[in-house]
Length: 472
Ligand SMILES: Cc1cc2nc3c(=O)[nH]c(=O)nc-3n(C[C@H](O)[C@H](O)[C@H](O)COP(=O)(O)OP(=O)(O)OC[C@H]3O[C@@H](n4cnc5c(N)ncnc54)[C@H](O)[C@@H]3O)c2cc1C
Image (cartoon, rainbow, N blue to C red; front, side, top):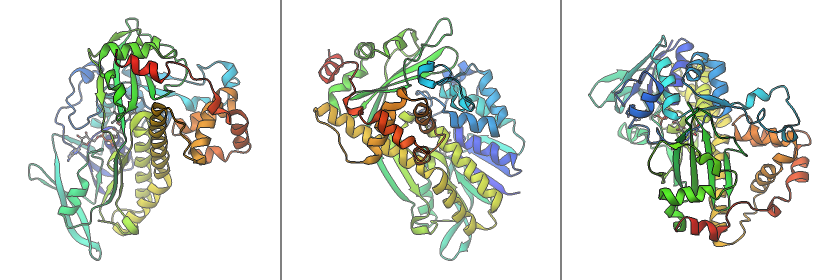
């Protein structure tokens, strides 16, 4: 049994804590925000103070991969989330047979877990608090790392953390789950270690969103996927818990002609102009304004540049390792995949072999979550450039076969049941694109049904109409 310290008690930090405690590790989770999880979902939304998570009250949805991990590994958490008024949306069961080709074994994999972030996290936290082997200490902020005798010559070895209150807590392994703003590189530098290799860029998107609630607890019908590109904007419709949902418009932050979408009337008029989105306005708004978020960074940290660890005894998991623009809704899924990879690595190599553990976890990260990060960032970069081209009235043609294939598959989903499921496998973090596209005959089907994607008619307002709607 190892003593493990997790910095950060967000959705993944707590999920990881429960996975490790179930394996018999002695886990302490340190969370800077002091407030205990409230007693019920509405209180969580109204008054849970979570300054450590910027996106706490912003639209979230939990992809099938996240749900599947919870149901398989943490069934008590899945059950607690289910008791709090969250809903399951099944895009295959709810789609017409002409699209799905009828029910198939395995279709249950596509069920999405829908709930506001505060509601889902409250349930996760409530179960974590009662988990044997896991101690969650709220109101404890980590300020730095403690060092000990090196395991590899010349490389600092981490043996615990120091809190802002001056407490020193020792552990066999320190796991950073401090989220997208984690200060790990500074802590490592202060210990005399190299900083991790870090790639950071503004993802370049701006979100204009609002939550709604129906009086009868019903949710609007989905007329298409939750994420729909309408020229130079994307609409994002996310069902949530207890008759609530969110509608967001995503634009390029540099697209000044659309900044008027911050205004409630302009925002509403624009949403009404989108044929498959307008009916999502039929509810009572929860916020009286348009919630705007920009400057969301894509970040990637490599704690083993050139194959040499910056330090042993410490790793970064989930957003503290890497994070992207969130419109594909993959963060919690990728984070929990990473948590599983860490748990599985610890099953093979304990922290008493710091060099071996560091190498094995890096290999597990590379095999499990790195491809998802790369695929998501690539999607974002293409979509941003595509939005810019549409705004300028030009054609986006990056000459990238990966982009062509993704567009063709998206377009072909409505014409073949295998392609419909292939698209969902990728979108829902169930199978990597390269695995899906390697299925026998699939590539040819995508070409057959999707090669003409550029010729498809556009729905909704054209660019001039959109700009007018955002400014009048
Ligand atoms: C606008 C937006 C929308 C998103 N929508 C979705 C979505 O729809 N679906 C999805 O799956 N993902 C979504 N994500 C991503 C998702 O929110 C993250 O992937 C997820 O929160 C990562 O969980 P985590 O536990 O790694 O980090 P976080 O949830 O960020 O938690 C980090 C925790 O660490 C604590 N902490 C930080 N520093 C310290 C310290 N020094 N000492 C102690 N504690 C510390 C913080 O207080 C915080 O509680 C979205 C992200 C954004 C920005």
